[in-house]
Amino acid sequence: MSELSNQLVIAEREEVSRGIRWLLADPLITDRNAPDKFDLVRRRRDPITKWFDYYCGWALIVEPRLGYARLAKVRISDETRPARRSRSGRAPFDRRRYALCCVVAAELFAAPLTTIGMLADRVRVATATDPVVSAFDTASRAERMAFVDALRLLESFGVLDAIDGSADSFVESETAKVLYRVDHTLLLRLLAAPVGPSQLGVPTDEVPLRVDDLLAELTRERRYGLAAGRHADVTGVSETQRNLWLRHSVFRRLVDDPVLYFDELDSDERAYLASPTGRQLVRRAADQGGFVLEERAEGLMLVDPDALATDGRFPDDTATAKVAALLLLDAVPGPTTREQLWRDAAALLERFPRWARGYRGIDGPRQLVDDAVAVLTAFRLVRTTSAGLVIPLPAAARYRVGEIRISGSEPDREGQESE
Image (tube, rainbow, N blue to C red):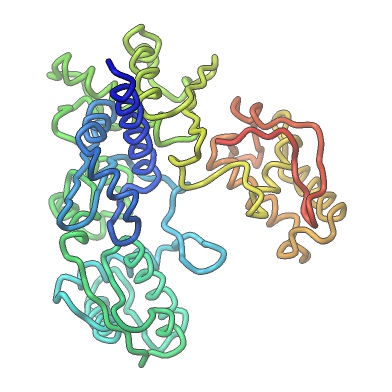
């Protein structure tokens, strides 16, 4: 093989690995919002599609003419990955915002063009007759803000395109003028669940009592038979279906979670990873995806040296809660009470008086610990118990360091590893 051919092969492998990692961080890439990323995924869609299908069982739909690539990641969501508001602070969506987002999405099918006022009226009428969702009140500023957060989320997906005006103006006045173009095709692609909610046929009053079961049913995939999900049953399941489910279930967690702990897997999944075939596939997937595989006695981790595959970074000195999480991590050598962490946080606030100004109130140390522990929990570095203990997990050892230095007005740590 000539030197030019070698260079072309290397370039293709690098592009395929970048496309894989970009889609893991952002399962919806549009030509409008990210033209360079979309162009690469469009050109390398065949090997990228095969990678996701083989290792994870996830379908990748690339529509060059319509300008989007959608990776249908089928997994039950958890509280560590909420939708977030676009305004400063990036607070997670609450129940009201999720409800309004769903109602807005349903009402968007009415026409390819709409205004923010017409859409608000349609949502108001729809919620006024809904037996579960409380009526939308455009006279309330808090309600208008929740409505705008839902719109901004749909804008970020490319479903809504503000032709004239800005959604934020609606927060200040319900008479604001904003003209939207609706992408109905992309709107239909947002729902990645293999089973539509309407197919379950569950009475409304039973939904709150059966949330876990309903989520499991929404994400059940027929090709695995009864081998998948929390109601797994190997009865009547072929060996092919079982092995396929084991491969996909393990790889989905490996690529989607910060770290995969063996003790969180069932016996079949642990046996699969311990087998020569399982380990060989893990290493091959990591190589093709551009990851560095860390293999430890407690589990596995795929580290992206370019930080392309994650929507959140740790360590990260741009967010106070993440800095606090890093600083407090050394205070959790073993099971630690929140009261002890409050004292540690208070000492940090006293030591660095110009840092963390948003946590300077009476409850500042308590709130700082709550936010920091939430970060550590999301990155699978600690777990919490109902008794109020914070317990370090094995991956926390990656971030042990011994020196704090001052960078400007904020504390920083030397020698940290990054995901």
